[in-house]
Length: 259
Figure 1: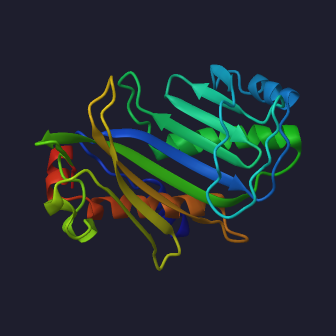
Figure 2: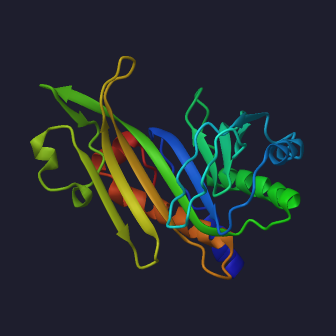
């Protein structure tokens, strides 16, 4: 029964016909920072020749989620790398204090789903442990989904179209005011999973029309003795369960949420 429940959590998914998904990120924060050097990243690439077709420098360090102490980065030192899977459109970013698997919309390449992100992370960590002889024990797992919501400008007032949030998650007076806005809600459920939903206006630029970012994030610590898979299943499942409740009926219909 336990195996059946785990499989059920792993297979949870949502199906839309026209969801404006632009980015998904799976993050694992290690309990202990692991050293990264130029020989380390070269050996990492050598041991994954068929999995990733490109290796790039770490262009910028990301702040790990949670309260653990981040690494102090030094200039002119190899602090990490990015491994690219061009076939699936995945990038694995490796820092001493964080591993990120990210899919970003490009070239009409479809989102390969949660299982593909987790598989990429697992394959990189397996090689990390072979090279460093130090286990990668996750202290925290985090997952985020970003959607691009079109904006309709009427009389200089940009409003998201469709309106993304249900009445329960729309702050009082925001819709009636008609101005560009930013809304954020943060909560921790009885399951001890932290959740955040952000709707943020992105002004028009020279090459893009104004739009709204709809961002949903969930994460929690990995308990002592708990498997990483269980924690990630819980976080992913929480987002899958929460997202439809966040959406307005209008957004559900426009984005084609299937029962």
